[in-house]
Image (cartoon, rainbow over all chains, first blue to last red; front, top):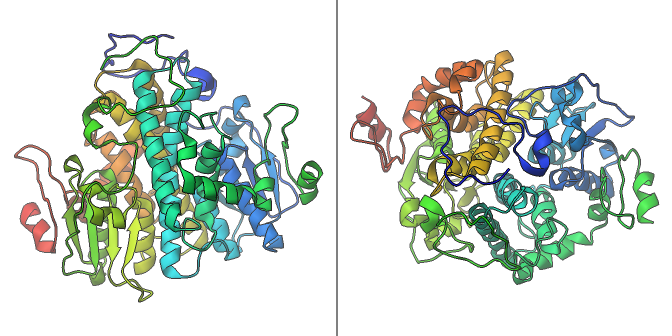
Length: 288
Length: 288
């Protein structure tokens, strides 16, 4: 593929399955299952189907934080959804998340006593778990509202980082200056929003660590710590001092160390990889 | 600006304020206020600062739905934030939403009895209002969870439509084939997700109209009805029959007709425009 300088969009768009860059093989203009495949189910009430991308890490960090807080019913099986293999288009996964994206959760023991409950979208899963275990979301109404504003901020903002900046900076078949400029500008603006907020607040919702931090850290913490897209220098990450302070502070949390490696399949031999997690011991073995 | 075929990103990105297309004048890589400007405050407890974009319409539709349901305390003043004039960078607005995006809400009579509460991000505002008035979010836990999954789905998906498809199809200074293909494919995939879901469900969360519908309609309903981006033909909107059924059904709701014109400043002489709304009569006059 190369850029056509004189491109005019057609009247009706049609799919050229050759285009799309590194992730082209899993990008489709239609939804739904491509093949029959049941999901496995383990021994715990919470069954997570995921991958250790930032959106996946949000949920595994949340579950590890809940376990660290003593919520034994937050025990979970984390099964791998390998998106490069098309696992997200299996019929079982599509039934849990019709949007074919990780993470997706099945709660086999919902508080309501209803039949098993599906929950999809990382933000919805964080809120669901916070309400189920009545933790990591401030009880004070004003702080709760502030935490939720930032949770939704993360959900609406990170697509510009992941689907915009990350894609055009790292994955697109060739660098397109206009698109890189557009999404770098927006990513830096978002980093600055966080930096200014964290200049005056220990955590996103004030003095309490909450699902707002758990949602934001895997994206923006990872970015300034250099865990994502190898873009620390390009984005001048060091200039966001308050964001870096917060990112490092959260990086040292035991539950964050544990949660971020679950369903991780990549990295060189020196990096941890943990395809599935069914028990605390699965993580203990690696982090010992 | 023209596309540089041999572009290599620099080591450290720097801002060229000349680039950026139609909205370049309001795009910045930094956040925060650019000038001192207090926000006006009207007579009602709820003060909305917004513009009739899809994200703005979500909230005005929600407020009109609540009023139609008899919640008299949902009365509101809707002040215009003209983003083409930089109103979102005024100090008063930034204090309500540090992210400088519409919509933003101040509740001067929060249920907690606390001091005035800020709420930002359209999804957070919908959830806040649904909880405040205990309406438009199913009480049944399973349906509530489903509504919230779809609410978060909308927040994480629409940036690919607005900041991706809409920008590159309609606003960018010249058409970039790769970017148009990328975001059209994803937009069509999302339309198909909705279409398949609405084949089996009257509303997004099942048989109850909820904040999930209110969040999704201004983006995806508008797209297939031809209200947004003039892209009905390009996206083959007619092929999404179930989505269209739902879109038309919601389009006829009185509260939707009312909500979608609030803070609207554009359109030709035959189209309604309502810069501010302080009373039901402001809308009545236009829709009579």
